Length: 124
Image (cartoon, rainbow, N blue to C red; front, side, top):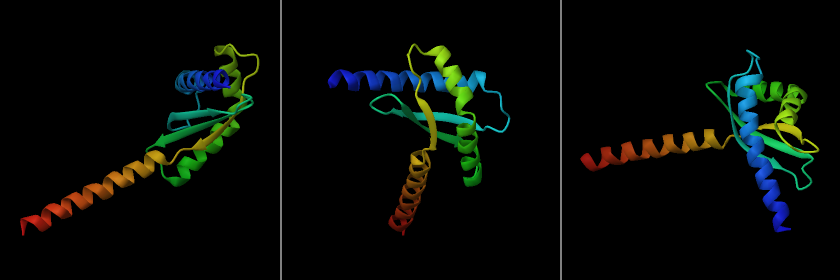
């Protein structure tokens, strides 16, 4: 069992690196924004890979549009991935937006506001 986990972790990690390179170098679609691959979670049997991404400098609608486009381009991206990875079977790619970055930024903003208001009160 532990060996399976180790393999899954290795495949996920390698897949994340390769997908980043593919999106950066091989996929030339002007509709895609600046996409970061945050995490890849591969099922135990390696059949499906959930790819969590963030897109910088776009609104909510832009985020959804980028994820939809990535899912449409999934067969092309998967083909590129198959060329780069030494696996008998390449996982089906399913792209999802990872809102943890947005949540973290919002928390940082709120903490900053609390810190600023806290200083205001102590000064009076």
